[in-house]
Image: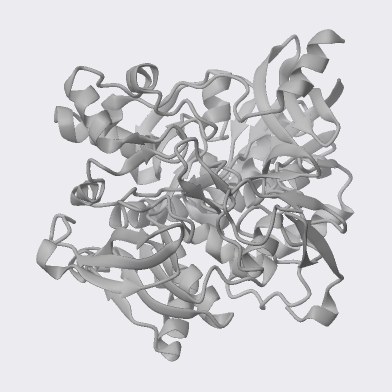
Amino acid sequence: MGSVELAVVGAGPAGLSAAITAARSGLRTALLDEYPRPGGQYLKGASEPDAAPPISAAERQGRTLLRQLAETDLELRTQTLVWGIERASEGWRLALHGPRGLDWLEARAVVVAAGARELVVPFPGWTLPGVMTLGAAQILAKAHGVLPGRRVLLAGSGPLLLAAAAELTRRGARVTAVLEAVPLSRWLRHAPAIWGNWDRLGEGRHYLAELWRSGTPYRPGWTVAEALGGDELEAVIVARLDRRGHPIPSSREQVPADSLCMGFGFIPNVELTQLAGCAHVFDPARGGWVPGVDERLETSLPGLFVAGEAAGVAGAAAAMLEGHIAGMAAAYRLGRLPEGQLARELAARAGRRRRLGRFAAMLNTLFAPAPGLDALITDDTPICRCEEVSAGEVRAAIRGGATELDALKTWMRVGQGACQGRTFGPLLARLVAVETGRPVGQAGCFGVRPPLKPIPLGDLAQEGAS
Amino acid sequence: MSDEDQIAFHIEVNGQLVPARQGQTIAAVLLSAGRRVWRRTQHGDPRGLFCGMGVCFECLVTVDDVAGQRACMTLAQPGMQVHLAAGEESGDGQR
């Protein structure tokens, strides 16, 4: 078992920023990430020789962080999953699984920068190979130079929809249409807030212009209703949405496609902070369940900090700012930064932080899936992909009294598979809300226990024997 | 990404040689070879790449005899042997 002063979990924009700041303040720092290379989803492919030039200040800043990482004295551990966390005599003990098997790491303080995952809405056929998330397709194209298919359809909502469409088009994919579920009328309602933040829309405007030039059809108020195919995707049924987001049956049309990429926004990854036991709140404007933090990004548990999307979905610029703050706050907590200096640093960044937070809340509200979208989840749709449980079975169980996610998990097996309910948990909470007429937050979220993700049983057994 | 810029090599997929480049995940290598069905569920349903970022565990393949590896999180290495438990794919898995 090793020990450091600060462990940063996640090497995306927030984690890079936190780890570099902390290490430069003199903290012995370890930076951990599950993927073989640092950078997170946002910076994947950024260091490839043929990477496109950065199109925003945030992307430039992210690439700078990757360069600074190489010059910073810290311990980078890639391909390393953090699957458990518990209190130790001085701080925290993290349970790891990496290339050399199981390991433990003690840290006096921890910054959780676990990022976010995509919010997906199930529909009939969504398990067919050829249907994937926007992020999956974007990374294939951006980091690996591979296209998801020959005829690509994109559906969902939010900024990533545009980014993925532009990336795929640039790489030569034939994008047949981009379906943005949010209708123009909702855009217009948010126009004043968007107008005031025009400079922050840089990436979005860039992508939109790129799509325009390529002649790709962009259809607001439409989405995917069904994926068709035998063993692989062959066609997609698309539908227009009414004002409540309900697909209009008479508008259904079939479009040939061998690839469908979809995503409806992001959900913070809160499993590690949940397992640590700090307080969480349900806040749709920040993407759902988020850990409660103070101004220094410290949770209700001393020495446990959260930065970036894991603290609330707000984009890469906010994530890097938060990472910096968490790195400094950890240095203060461990006696390496005087309180006065921390206060000055916080004050200097307070305005920008507030503006980024407000803008993110607006985007998260604008692009939140409309209630009617739940109608896509027909009773025969498998809602839990791992355990292959249908939405109809789940709805019957909810009506039978299982009105919280953990009750459904025990009763229906949903969320007991390898993904532990990460993929569809938020949607399940919406189904509960629809059936019970109560707010989504009251359905709770899936409880967590170690290991947070599957690890090989053999490694656990070996550890037990030694 | 031009082939000249990247170190190219092969991996074996169900006994067949498939081209790969350094830095590519197994997922990227499989898709660029046109393979999309990677395994079947206990009910026989086909599965392949879905989340692409290590969350959903749909893309599990066997790598060098170790089962249950996420194709989206594992970089391809020269000489790697990948096995897809996708069932009746034609022409492979028979050698």
